Each structure stands twice: as C-alpha cells, then as structure tokens.
Image (cartoon, rainbow, N blue to C red):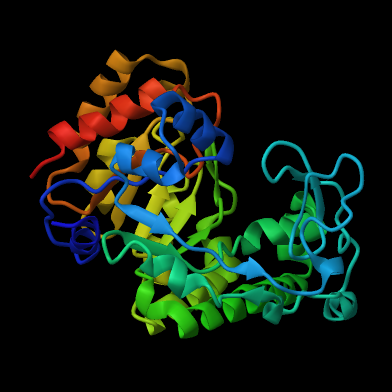
Length: 352
C-alpha cells in the first residue's frame, strides 16, 4: 500500500498492511532532527520517520496592518487572527482579553477578521507535489475554544456559560464563521487534493474534561459539528487534536462527526490506552498514545521501544489505529534518538 492508501483504509475502518504513522513537530525539533540525520530538508526528516501524512496551509494575503506579524510590540511573539497579542514559547499565552466585559452589542461590534484575507490559491499546488503518495491534511486549525478564552478570559468564559449563554453563543458563532469560511474556500479550490480536515481544540485537563458533558453538548458540540459537517460535505474525514483527559466526551465528539482523535495522552486521567481501545476502538479512529510528555522526552531508546511495542499490542487489534506521539507538536527538547526508536519500532512491529 502507499501511505495514502494505508491511511484511507484505516479511516474507512478497514485493516491496512501496517499501522500508519503520523508526525507533528515544532520547527525547532524539525531543524534539530534535520541536523541530527544530516539531511537536506524537513521533507527528508518526515521520510526518515515514515510519516504517512503531509499537511498544507493557507497563507495570509490581507492588509499588512492585520498580518499576524505586523509591528509586534516588544515581548509579543505572535498575534492571533482575532487581534490577540500573545507572549511565550510557540504561540504563547494571551496578554489581554479585549471582550472580557463585553455584552452582545460589543461582540457584534468587534472588528472580526475577514476570511478573504486568507488565500488558498497555492494549496492544491502544494498538495499535488507529493503526487498522491501521502494522506493530505488541510483546512484551518479552527481552535474556536481557545480563541474564545483569549477574547474573554477562561474563568470568565466558564461563568458566562451560566450567566449569559447568549454571549457565549454569539462569541462562538463569530469565531467559527471565520474558520468555516476560510476552510470552505480552501475546500472549494483544493478539496480534491485534501483527504482530512484537521482541526484542534483542547477540551481536557490532566485530570479530566474542562466542562461537563451537559455543558459540552450545550455550547461546544454545535460549533464542532458545524465544522465536521463542512469537512464531510466535501468528502473529507475530520481529525480533531485534543489534549488532556477528555475520555468522557468521546461519545459527544463521535456524535459531532469527528472521525479521528489525535493526541491521546496516556498519563492523563481516563486515557489509559487499553481502556480507550476497549471503549471506543470500534467507534472512532484513535491516533496517538505514545507518551511524549515523559517517555519520549525523558526516556531512552530502549524504553521507547518497549513502550511503543506495548502500545502496538494494545491498539492494533481490529485496526482503527494510527501511531503518533501523544501530542501534535514534538518539542525541541525531545531526543531525536527516541523519536527514531518509536517510528522504527512501529515499522518493525506494526505489520498486520
């Protein structure tokens, strides 16, 4: 099987020739791995890992003053599409919450971004350069939950769910309107070159879901289903990255139309791989489970081999499994030797 055929078989709930492998990594880790492997580029790194996926992105093409890197003040490392300045590693943490005191009128008047600022003109060209070899991830990341937290503050958002639900509904509607429109234009222009709509929202903490199932169904399932329905309208599978202990919400996620769950942190509450496989292994494709929080960062190659073999033994039966680290973003401090040990073990022992 080609990588694409292998992945599409799993997404169709069929048994492939071997377990697919997926790699999400920070630019810093990829550069470190490139130097370690003495290869020319990131593509060569992905090939060495045996990654069965590739990802394509839209590009900002709007007014310069609204660009994510336009005149960033000192200490600001990134600006979100909704004008939130952030500081810290990667995308950082929000420095302000401009709608913290907002009611419906202020939300309607907020300067929401124009979806036309994002261009998908090159997406199909980017996707077709792999000549159909790999499963292609595309569409906007769509972290509407995190964007809402940025705009109003987390504690405030949770309180608004009880005190002013109409404000929360309006907030999510405006945020998802933006992501929906950008992804829709992407799929209209390049949907035939894309296989999976890949989105990300973290609904779990280390000890369990952030909100209860009833609150999730009331506020978060509808916008999530709206995005999933968009992907399905264009014939795409939908993969959700979600961190933490969110196992009680998995039936809701499947109900929303999510086809694949990516991350699956085995050290978070309720996320023991054998339990996930037993409860949900016939319901939804599971992608992850190799502990990147402890084993991949703090362990050694022999330990990684042992843990990866155990995960394969647990997750492979019946299919519906993709091997990857338990996060979507391998950090720079992760030893390349450990990542190689994980993927090489999957290649050696992941054959059906």
